[in-house]
Image (cartoon, rainbow, N blue to C red; front, top):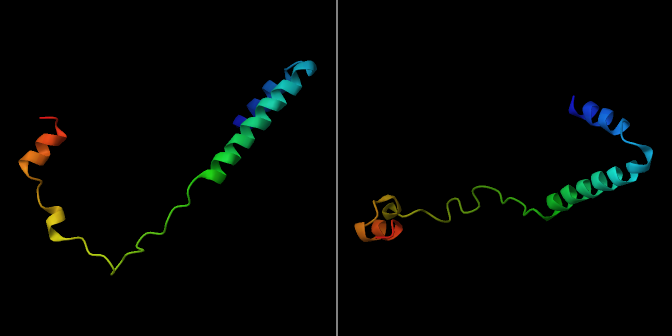
Length: 73
């Protein structure tokens, strides 16, 4: 398991360097927590169900001039 390998590596680090390793791990973990706290919450699917209907024209092919614009022509 990866955790056991990490612990084995940590055990081989000299005592006077352990504070630096701790700081690295601690701040990395805090950064992960901060990222998780700041991610936008996902909205539920289907909020506009039966309120909004996609027009049939949405599925029609795009005109050539629009396609050309996407291709930079």
